[in-house]
Image 1 (cartoon, each protein chain N blue to C red):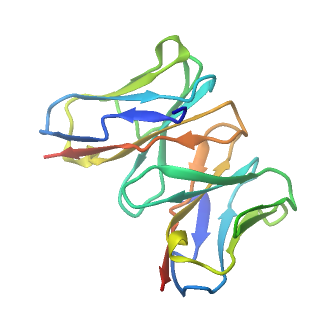
Image 2 (cartoon, rainbow over the protein chains, first blue to last red):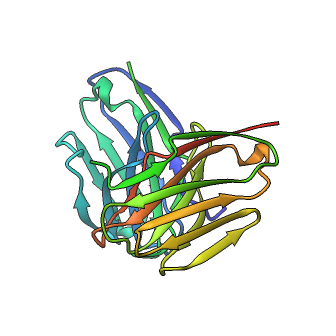
Amino acid sequence: DTGVSQDPRHKITKRGQNVTFRCDPISEHNRLYWYRQTLGQGPEFLTYFQNEAQLEKSRLLSDRFSAERPKGSFSTLEIQRTEQGDSAMYLCASSRGTFREAFFGQGTRLTVV
Amino acid sequence: SQELEQSPQSLIVQEGKNLTINCTSSKTLYGLYWYKQKYGEGLIFLMMLQKGGEEKSHEKITAKLDEKKQQSSLHITASQPSHAGIYLCGADIANSKLTFGKGITLSVRP
């Protein structure tokens, strides 16, 4: 399967714990995006990478959030000291570049209890 | 304020009926994307429009881009229960990230 893959699909964690999500983009896609989506809302942009370079971060991305894309391949999104407000669906997408179709993974649903 | 406004917020139609939903941008559009989402799942790419006046179709779904109005419409002909879901428009605004509207929830009654 050559689609965007996200792992895990679901994560339940206790408040204060750290969590890490992984995204494997479609091969040869140089752009990788992270979004957060809550119930009834559209995806909210968090950050994106052009190859291994992180080009933009949203104000939503507090210092508890960090994203990496080593070697321009897979990406990880880490949330430190999770809060209940972090509960959401975290979506990853990849594309060949600007103004090109972006394809999404199935998302990671995070529940902070 | 929302850069992409979608209307209506939700829609319920009888199976077999046609419907149109809209997406309007408050800023210059560089590209307009339509996605469909089932609850709790990822987004499925439907189509992308780049040029004013461009129109694309996929099965019974047609999307158009009106560059002057900074608006796109998505039309479904002879709706089926399989068309039910959340329709999201996304756009390349400010020449960088892909920004989304809140989505339109479509229900199709058999």
